[in-house]
Amino acid sequence: MTEGLSGTTALVTGGTSGIGRATAVALAGLGAHVVLSGRDATRGEEVVSRIRASGGKADFVAADLTDAASARSVAARAREAGGHVDVLVNNAGIFPTGPTADIPEAEFDRVYATNVKVPFYLVAELGPEMAARGRGAIVNVSTMVATRGMAGMALYGSSKAAIELLTKAWAAEFGPSGVRVNAVSPGPTRTEGTAVFGDGLDELAAAGPAGRVAAPEEIAAAIAFLVTAESSFVQGAILPVDGGRLAV
Image 1 (tube, rainbow, N blue to C red):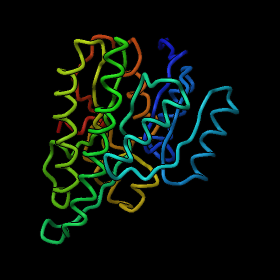
Image 2 (spheres, one colour; image 1 turned 120 degrees about the vertical axis):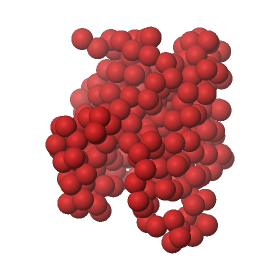
Image 3 (cartoon, helix red, strand yellow; image 1 turned 180 degrees about the horizontal axis):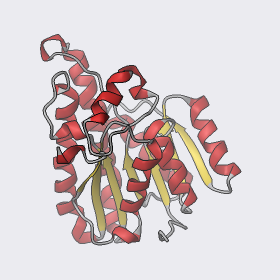
């Protein structure tokens, strides 16, 4: 039985769809007051309504996370909703693909702003507060292509490789104060965002031992494990949740 999160507040970025939505629902089910952020207010309120209908606590914060200022704003609004933030799930991200030579500078900047700068400044804002209280958990959502070279994935993969290094650096920085920092590295997962890959997603998944695409709830379950006391001795880890793709 997983130990609950009663009395805690969890901020889940990109919580209106896919892995983020599944994570928000999972953490609320464990008793956390979930504050979820996203760009789509309609989808955000749908997630909040679903959680509240099940007896959970949730609030939605509309935000387009693109820079340090937007990260600080979301952190402040999460504090207002929950009093303080005990759990941070850095899930929001964008994943354009394409040949290196075809990536315009504006796209490069947008990917690194969303995938690296925003998590960096959310941790800068919330990590010290967790450390001051002597407890907290941070989970960053990475990808299997952060460590596996794939054509067309240079920009996205490199941004997530940065997140994996930051995970380890933050574990070293905040761990001695009682804040655990880890990451999950999902394999092919069926979400609204990955629908654009069509059959290619199934083909990629078929190469792994599991032989199938993951559901968002399977990734969310790993995130939930990493923010509960059951993973109390897990620190600075990159947990592959990829159907064994790492093994082949």
